[in-house]
Image 1: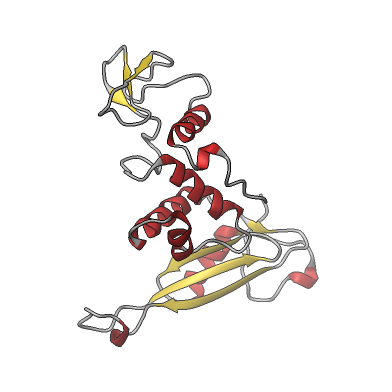
Image 2: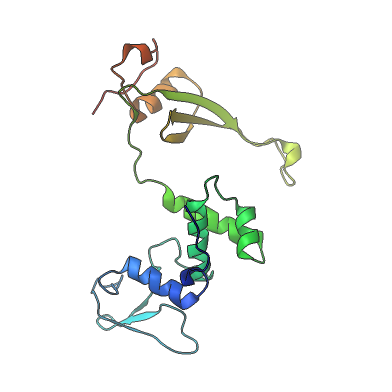
Length: 213
């Protein structure tokens, strides 16, 4: 995917807000307090922030960012849009350090904060079963957690956490925090998140899988 960095929504704050409002409110501003559609006036002034509206019904102020990952952020909207576009369009992903260098933030923590919010917004609401007919799902687990000597303020060894990952070949992958590496614990997650294959050559004895929907 090509990235057109000359697009005004990535450089101009007013254009960025117009674009975001058009996507969020295709039928006009919607008051998040009373739910009235297209019954708000923009607040214009030297001290008024971008995208601020006042509802004519409940007389409360609001912006298009309420209820989104941008709510409560002081980061300019055009940088939010550029960061989201870079993370979605980059073939090999985008690290917080790279985003920090490209967007010119004064603090690395700002880029780190943006990456976490954008990735959280990408998380699906529900995880559908993976695998199925003529497909292979691979499962593996690992322990996550560093050593005491690598943590500046740790007084004791950090607790290790077990993470199970299910990978659908040429498909999706999902990771889960599990209590322990036991057959019962692993079975619950595998049965819940995979479909049964009808191909006998892809079945392995002793590996429980879910029934097809």
